[in-house]
Length: 303
Image (cartoon, rainbow, N blue to C red; front, top):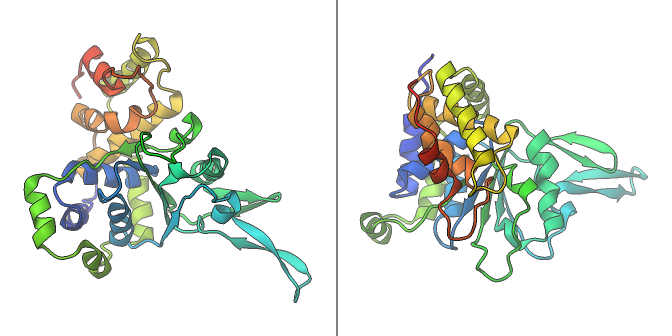
């Protein structure tokens, strides 16, 4: 495998988002795996900063769309406008026509508006009034949402959650990182000064290389056992779908590449497992997360 210069990318991200190396590693994996990322946490935890930092370091076009209760699907996708000079309707693309779309506080919009992103996230295209319009390639959605306990939120439906390869939480920074936030340079100024370390062409090549990361037969068996146990476990109401299983495999391949290997190891699968499966596998309130049940139930196989 050709060496991939991903370490400088992670270093640049760690200068902006302090004390969260695992979250940043997973976020980069999500982008390399052609997935979409859902960031769930309290306001003010750095979700928007992380989204913009990813776009800037990758040299991609970035647009931020604030989701509100009155946002309509056309505000995301675009609409046809009558042009008097041409005597015809012309399609005016919406904010979704970008390389990185930040859907900020996505769960403050109605379910109808949330679902407007389904085709875009799955097919990389938008269909309006019978016409299909291709989105840029690469196309990466980073959505943020506030906890369901907060007022004015609408839970994302299962079909929407499944479109996100990973769901991550940033959590509070540790004491050392928070002190640096208080005494160091303003993060907004640092974002503006950030330089791109790659571009869309190189990112697409890296995404293709992820698919060529080797997964041994024993590890394929391990993935299949994880899926099978999820469908039979008494604490998990709905098991992992085939699409979810493919997502887990691709995320593990991306993790292996980020860590500089041309093959997947068991720890790569376990590193991405919570982020990939926990939002897909509902468990009773107060129970352990699905990934914890699966790790306990399925023994790790050698690579």
